[in-house]
Amino acid sequence: MLSWIKGIILGFVMLLPGVSGGTAFVILGVYEDLVRDLAKLNLKPHLKLFGGIVIGLFLSGFLFSLFFENHRNEAAVFLLGSLIASVRFVIQTDYRVNRQLLGLFAIGFFVGFILGAKPIGVGGYVEDISLAFIFTGAALSSAAMVIPGLPGSSVLILMGLYDNVFYYLSDLKILQLLTFGAGSLLGMFLLVKLLARLYEKYKVSLSYIFAGLILGSARALIPTEISVWIVILFILGFSTVLLWGKKAL
Image (cartoon, rainbow, N blue to C red; front, side, top):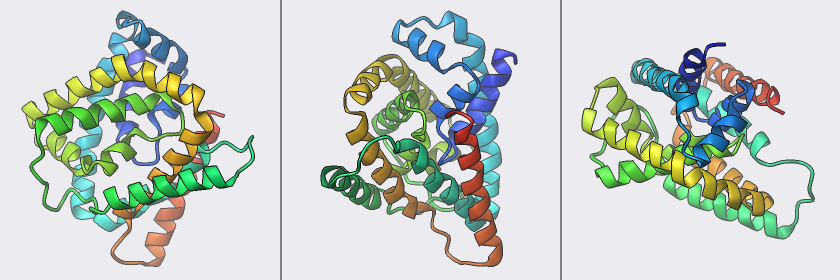
């Protein structure tokens, strides 16, 4: 598959809560080479891939913003199922659960629950956020791609930036998009290597913290009404990520 086509696919799915950019990189066969080259600041082999990611991000931002605006509950509950299913791939099953790990999970859940208090939905009011905050959120979310199973978009939800990113993409807010892009590059080049080392050293503990953060922040996606169709969409979102993630195992 051509690199730019892989990039478009990656860019399209990277903004979806529950869909891990790292898992997508693994499935498309570019994860190991990309992380290794990013750590060495070797961009040349991946320029077409990055170009495709940019195209995919703009496409997803435009389409999802329209869908959220007109079908907020349906979109939110699909993404809620996706986000919850992603926890399966953040927490591995080859080690014993103990009180310390459950405590770390509880801490992560509490932090995620507090930070994820703002319901997402592009059709609503979008707060004015400083460029420095946009830069920081972009760096952290892009660095999260080093961990297959961890959705970088969950970082945007935690920081209250998810709606804003869709808004910037759909309305072509150039200054904010350039700031977000610069932050994403910093996260890829500088934070990926650091996060990879930390994750390798504290994999089990960080996995439970991340899982708690994801589940806690999921409150931002809770629908305002329940129906049979809403339940079906939840199951569909859950199943999609479950099947997607298993391909990378």
